[in-house]
Image (cartoon, rainbow, N blue to C red; front, side, top):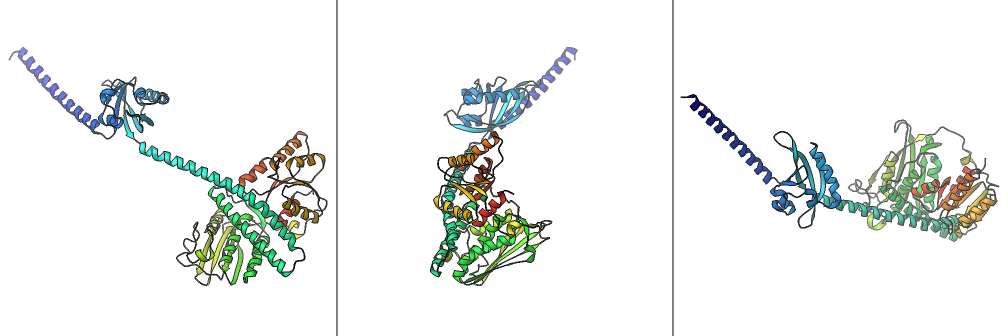
Length: 532
């Protein structure tokens, strides 16, 4: 065979080999094409200028276009609203630099409907490795986006509802606490007069009703604060014996009338001062005694407390029990008795209630680093036990609690527009020998402060013409401008939320006394700011 013939045969073999290789590549390409065309994901290919070069069936189906309607069109101009073009240009630039990306974008269908797509974009390279465009897989996430939007709207509506609730509770608190302060104050003054037995019984009824209303209002306020995560545990030195005594004493007239014996036994170790949140402890104790009083028609309620110095690490632990001889609780109900809006099945109809008291007790205990539990026998009574972390304060002489402070001659400016509340505070200050001046709005308070010298100002918050906040802001501004000495200003307010107190302190007030306040509370705040 000639060399020419050999060369011809070799060429033919090479051609056949190349044809086989091309056939294999074509088969692979067809297989790849088939996979792309049958994928559930919409796939789109664009060139470096973002013009569509290939639109796969699922993508066309997703947006309602034919491939012919898309080829050659710039993807962003064809599918996106104008305000999204810049965002898409940035994505295209990233692909052209060889970067991959994952992003979400709203795309318009042929019929004008908006669909949210999750796009995964990757650069496309030619045989030489040069970037010639990009390919994106598109997944329809419209349903997820609708769910997210619905959730967001629900959150907005919930927040609006919570805000409306807070505004309502704030207004309600003010509108109720203001007359309550007068009613409770007047009843205290009346109890010190010569009343016969029938009159004293009627007065006791007024005091019981007022105390019950206050406890209900405090419970609603506590719940609102807990739900808004605005309740904080604030530790201060407190005389536990005095705290227990005050709470127990508030129930004695009611239980005496029912014929229920109320007793309180405190371990000797509790004499002295402890670092606790006094208001939270008072709330928990009040709720538990109130709960026992509601379900005890006869017999007794026993309050006991002791201190375990090793109960909670270095802090120690206060252990309290409230035991009653009431109706008791079914064993099956004790597991959920501390849930919100939960009551034992044998207690609902006869005794009523909101079903919130014990839930608030549990949340307050946990806020104070403790907990609450119950043991009960149906028909024989219940024992509620709770504990707080509590640290004992070094013993010291506290004259404020050992003797009545001498407030004679203390110069006090009182700004109060409610006539009954004004009469109550006038009576107390006169009894204590204070040198008091009384005004009914903020403007008058400012003028009196400018012309006279005072040791402390008691400032109502809500007053006509000029509020207590506005008056305080003016006084603090002029003090600073004229380099005058700081004068203590104490808010007298029926607004009971933490943000109300923060607002008052923010404008320069030194303290915050919530209505209804007691004679002791008012005396204590005046002790605090009287001249030394």
